[in-house]
Length: 87
Image (tube, rainbow, N blue to C red):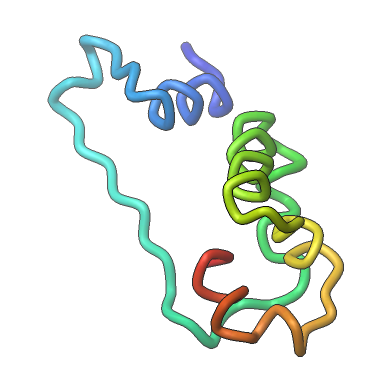
């Protein structure tokens, strides 16, 4: 049986196993207004692939969005230019 981290890595990497081909997955994210300091921290702690994706987003944006998500301040996180990519 695959670990949750392996399943998430396979999903993110589009490496669906044959036995998973008939299954469909959906990720649901709430809209703007639900962002809070600390969001994603537990996910990043539990799943190395989540940390890698967050690092890729930081690189793409040219700013440490993952640090803002983890540490705040809340007022900066709620700005549209930060909240939208954070969600």
